[in-house]
Image (cartoon, rainbow, N blue to C red; front, side):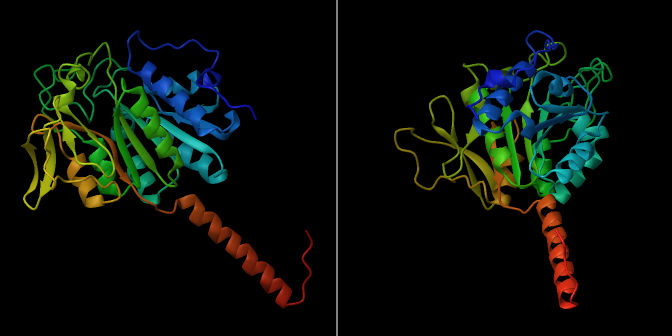
Length: 327
């Protein structure tokens, strides 16, 4: 097979997102990741629910399935279980995954189905014209909360970590290299992989994530976590998040002489992942990167191992009783 390029994963259908939507950047990152993974077109299946993000299967040159609201994970589960050799991506939004699909999200993680779930988080129900979603921030004004949202919001990455997903990460739509590299790592992990991608909606949350993207402000407001490295941030690289017995805190130092006892991030440490995934602005910078990456046998691998064992046991029983087995 000739090496595929990102363009090879473009479909021949027109992309119908609003101009400037963050979904375009995510589409670019996904196609880049698919090409780098080196699988053939027919090895990919893209499953989606309902929402702007869920138009995704039409825009990639792979197998795809556009399901109903909140039901992408159970459909994808059936596909993965029927053919575990397939790379099954689930494209979903914050409303689709965290609200009507919340129960499926929980049990997909509990079973550890080998799905790669990419959740586009624009903190709003965009396709249905601007209602607040489970990730809409406290106080935000939307069509359904004109005086400010009174609900506390979900932190999807922290939720996935606390539920025991073996791979959890967060990225930002405009950071194409980070997003594609995370997707590649997520795809290579055996079990349920969850990637939260903060994504702007030009109609309803156009300025929502500007502080994390603007070159003048992002360095002081984004913490890029990397395995085996201290959690340093800031325009001058003179700040760090450290974890003490009392909890996390920010310290400042001379960037030419960083302290030797800075907390080093370990993405196989679930306790550290719980602490860091729960850090949120304005008290702390927004963490992006891979929170958790551990080995955990997937449901489909356990299932098929048991099936093959039962077949072997049955064949052994037949042989012990002098029955011939014909292929």
